[in-house]
Image (tube, rainbow, N blue to C red; front, side, top):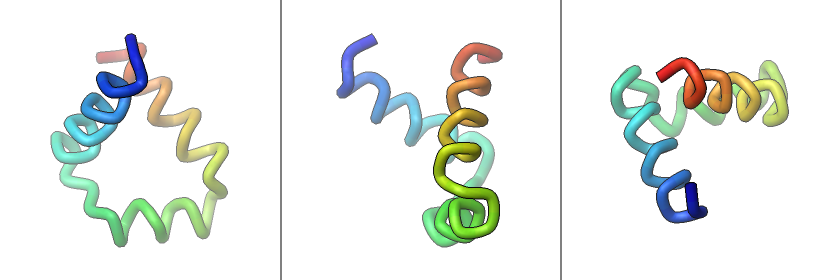
Length: 47
């Protein structure tokens, strides 16, 4: 998967789960960007 497709996929996953940018930023602030990114990677594999 190239970088463009990863960005598109990230957007589609966040949109699918109804996660807005402000919620994403709040999650990153609370749990850390690393954990949020790894969770997104797990969603990629699961979907």
